[in-house]
Length: 502
Ligand SMILES: [Zn+2]
Image 1 (cartoon, protein in one colour):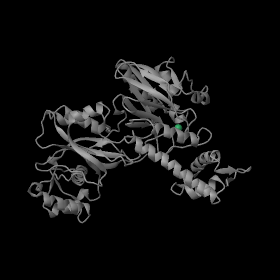
Image 2 (cartoon, protein in one colour):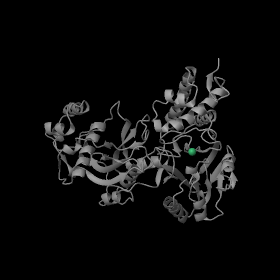
Image 3 (cartoon, protein in one colour):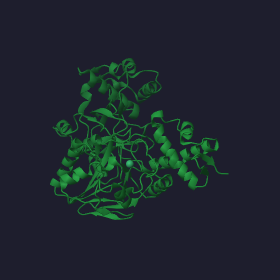
Image 4 (cartoon, protein in one colour):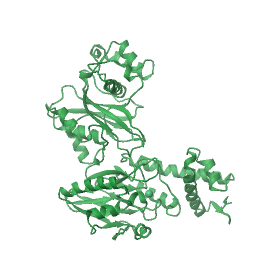
């Protein structure tokens, strides 16, 4: 499991904002970013080695000092807003040359503060929580959040080539409204901050910030990237870099649908059961347990959950998932391509099943049209890559499935079987498709140049993959070769050697 990196973020309040409905500076991360691309967030980032050297007044504690320094630097780098004592004396032009000094690396952050006789003060940065990225993420951060006021006469600006696509002042209540209308995606601490600020700048503001169960550095378990879709990552014996499989709890006022309870571990099964029980206690009934496909890291907790909920609990899956599972996991209802699962109650929630083989023969995705949500199972994942391994896997089917997902109109989010939700669905789908096609071309080229076995092909083509993963890469090559044979571009000799067709 990756160790979280230290980071800090700034929740920047507008100067002289309405205390009943405060405005905050919200940024949108670039769609191109591999990590949380397309998410809405606050300015912030990782600690820099020199951050700790900047003096911070009224702050005896070293770690907090480094975090405040990091927060102030990141805020300045990303928005050009400088929250430092002495900064009010600088003209806009001076601030700009200071910004250039930092960006160009001519001066380090502490040296720059010293040079311009600026200093940081902990009283300008109110600590409002410490959040740790759940273990499902490829990159993890241990982030301290600070509330700061934008100094008068300064206005945030987002640079052109930055990690950020845009930024805006927005009333916290309006941002929460956008999230509720499924118009934007944010990680739990950002959403919590917006909801807290939407309650106004009350006397007990900081207490309300810190009252969240995960504001103390305890990793978040139950993640509602989008209203009514809870992502609940459970630890599973899955493939690295993933360590967890996402179970999804999709709910309305009356019903709850459970997708892929995958953990075989008792502690994880209990944590999931508790969360399910809480949703039931609020007046819902479990509609059924649905499986995206038959892999053990997606079905490992089904029997335990059924035992917990009662044996009458139904399990639904595609026929080609039910068959290989056989007696190990009883499937009570078969789902076909295009079948609808309409949940009772509000909001309106209707999921259309898509039979999308490739990763597994019976693989299902679920598409909800109203909000543009796609639950993608292992066809698209939030981290690592998808394994296509014969005989369950089939490269031609997989590419067809990717194209079918790509053709869905108005997708706004993909919930994959592993990793965080994907806020840039079309960018991600295009990357997946072009990655596979590029691999295919390279494999064909290698075979044309004489690579006659999977091992030879891997040695030539998979130079970006660690030797430990070569056995897995060979499986992927076999899947590609099957497709290339189908396409008539190569042949296999009787002893299994690959030969180019003429
Ligand atoms: Zn799988």
